[in-house]
Image (cartoon, rainbow, N blue to C red; front, side, top):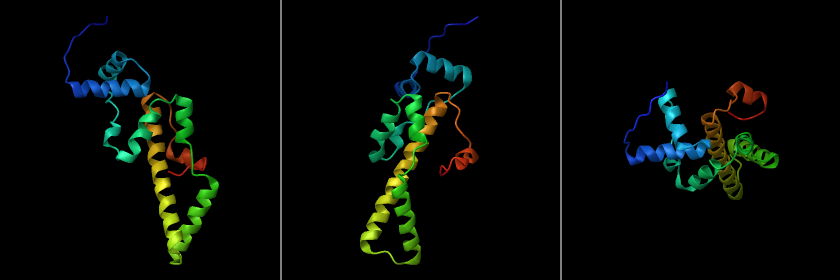
Length: 145
């Protein structure tokens, strides 16, 4: 038989629960029930992410699971990946020009940004109760891990 309990929680704790409610598309009441019943912590706040990524990470929270999965499984465009590989090879050989160094830096930043966004998308899917693939399954699909 369910029981009703009234409790007062600090504002920052409630804000965390509101955040999880938004990211999981559930009412706050259901989120709190799930946390109490499953001992599941609220998701980490994107406020801890670098400033330049926060808006993109928050935008992920508004996506449905299908779109979120597409983001999680996304990759650099093949042409950019080839260019990055070529520039990394030239960098290893010590033959990069100044222009190529800037291109390498730009592509590396883009790849790092994409990695963080994909990781957050996978975490959101997990919090929403979706099954996420193991690392070895991602490797089979050709996804970097």
